[in-house]
Length: 566
Image 1 (cartoon, rainbow, N blue to C red):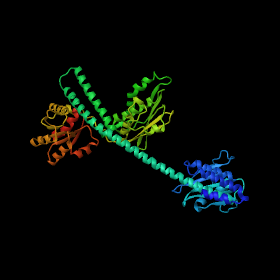
Image 2: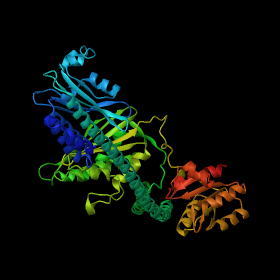
Image 3: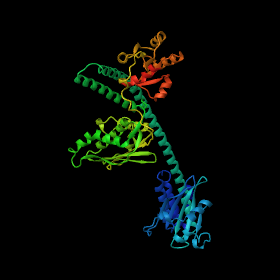
Image 4: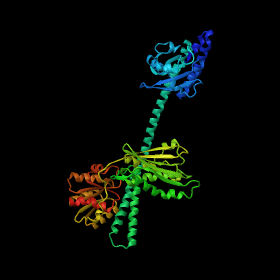
């Protein structure tokens, strides 16, 4: 196409060089920048400016048509003298429609002399006189039209002008197609890059999960042994001080279990317990109180402005979920908001429901974040706090919200603060799940129940055994699958408790063999490292019930009571 323009320059008659030659020279200038053009608007603007310069046109337009047939004014240019008028709204849609339908260039010297146009509202309203239009074609595909007009005089354009418009349109079509291809390549690259990032994060998380799984198993064994003995010792005679010490040990073990659960949440190794009706206002008020020590203390130390947390409009709605887990999400968001305001400021909480979900907003007046930071915000181990942060808070928070069927959205701008929006589905349940049952261990004993405990950790094995014996159960111990099968062959048990992970073996092997033998005992899987819901894990290992380490005395009694009754 560039060579054709040069040929036109070479053969053009000397007498007619004038405007035609200037136009072709502009075509050459525009064409030089065509090959490396990436920003479509800038290139089209150069094309239309050149066209207005070499013709007497007052307005120029590029109207693009997508593959679905939808049109839009991509570029509109007008000469000085149109104050307060949006040039984009002054293109004649009648002429554009004809050009799209006919797919050919057209010169209209005087629109008022054209019977097909004189009665069109757009022609009369805008008082268009001279018009030129040319289709933007590339390899037979219509990309749009290029349109110029003059509204002050008829006969402003001639055939040479139309030929120039066609040349410009051909070059513009190449630019548009190149830009589209570049955008498609960019989109494809982004898709591949995002897929690669997801794969890398998934593999990294998988490796962390494998490590965390072993850590969770070992720690849960230790906590189970501690918790069993602390609860068992509480049943003996102790003065008030000793009892308080035992309660403190129990509380520390339960706190340790909570830390393990957060680790398992992060690595997706723990499935959720049963959810219950949870009041959003209670969750937010609890989060505010738990963080008061952080932002309240900042009031007297920050120069200029104090740190404050305000509860705005919070609708009284409920979700189906875990109150402690949701509270942990908003504690994390509040602490991050306070950290983002080194010079003080206000954090505002609001909750509104709409279309079956509640949107909880945590907005701060802090330093804000750049787009690159927002993109990596929920990536495990990514932190902007240096040595003060571990990069797990938001990753865990997102995992909790997703497990509740929700999502987190972030809006932020450097210097203008951040807004985190947590969306949770509103749920209706007939009655609250859990609670109101008291402690079954105070009302039930296991007198006469014969129990086989299978575990390769001696502290766990003896801890569970001593607790069951204190409840009246007849207990036998085994440390491997073969030893357990030998015990089952020699005696009848009402319940078999088996750890999922044994040395080189699995509790699933034992349960499958007992099922094959139709052995009539309650099969209870004991584990601290499962990544499936209770029904699914029980079905996969042929267990009747599940105890998650570390468990309380009442949990043990509740599960084994069904074995005693059967």
